[in-house]
Length: 281
Image (tube, rainbow, N blue to C red; front, side):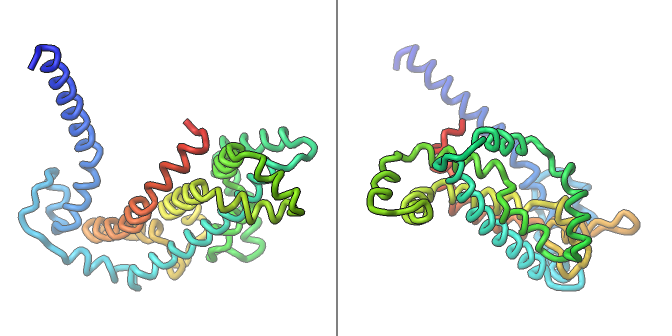
């Protein structure tokens, strides 16, 4: 092996070692949480390492029924909210994206620019007027305030993502369908929508992850323990006035991460395709 080849192998090995070290640092908090969920409460904060001497599954047993009802109730609530948000984003954002990408109407560019500007608008700015509206409609402690905005294409990021994808589709398909007598509704449903599978899958995956992990808006609207979602239920394990059940909280946190990992692993291929084909760098 020549000196140049040896140097190239050494550089490549150094890069791999560096990447592995960075991965270990990034994964350490997650691994520590998993290990801590298998430790008694008195050993959780006394040991910072990942070495597990004794396996204790009592945290999972205690945490499952610690809040007065099975933790599966909160998982089901989160699933209902996530599925509702996914359906809302897929329907409304795809229709709005088709309008911006294919329809010709006055001030289209202005409305598209305004839509893009809403991406920079933090949720803390609009949460107060939204809460007042839903409170006057007596819709708090329901899932309506969390799902209804998704049916109105309020997630501008997904609208922009789908617009970029539709613009990459040849207009010849639209012209051929229009010659056959198809209108915009038929073109959208029969031609554009089936070709948008990567963008739709990307929207569904991101919506699920963001909704599943959302804590702020769910904490604002849901105050009845019977309608708690997973993030709000996990917060109930920590009590500033009395003792906190850290082991049970870590155990249920591990349980709550499983759906996210499953969705990401199953949809990773579509996620990469969706981002790659929309022109987002």
